[in-house]
Image (cartoon, rainbow, N blue to C red; front, side, top):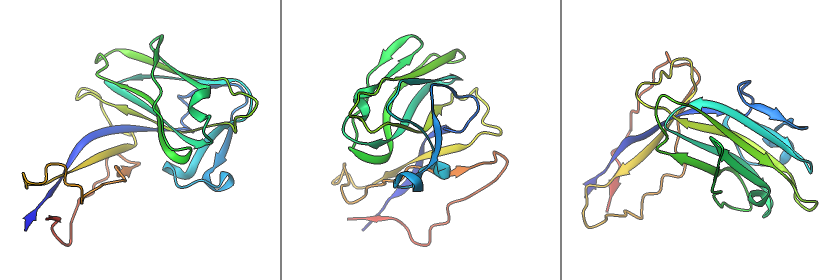
Length: 196
């Protein structure tokens, strides 16, 4: 029997859709996951754009960024365009109806530079609308996370070379969040993680 380990993979700064630094253009409305019949999102808040054109813009300093949406139908990703520093970014494809779906993102950005991300939404008549969950910024080591909402990605490390992909372990929720950077927390597992 082998004992595995959890390790911190990546730290993100979580930018909730209600953050005033996100500039919305068009008739966006605040909504809750309950009102749309969706699963949980960070803080259970959403911004919704229904059947009309609109956009959002966010300025940030970091080495990576990703936009997460809730999808309400199969056309969701076809009605948005992500622009990072004036250049189009490819869209990701996710499930037809879900929350916390990655719309687009980019890593390995220059450090110490102010970047701009814009999402331009042009719904077609048959689309069910566009829903923003949150934005994740990957900070460099020189960026302070003081006062920011932090999200951590965890990786499971198997010591067994016979199971390099370790299909028995699948971490599907990749985060912890703490609204206060001065707070503290610790993992205290009641049992060791085991594989094999």
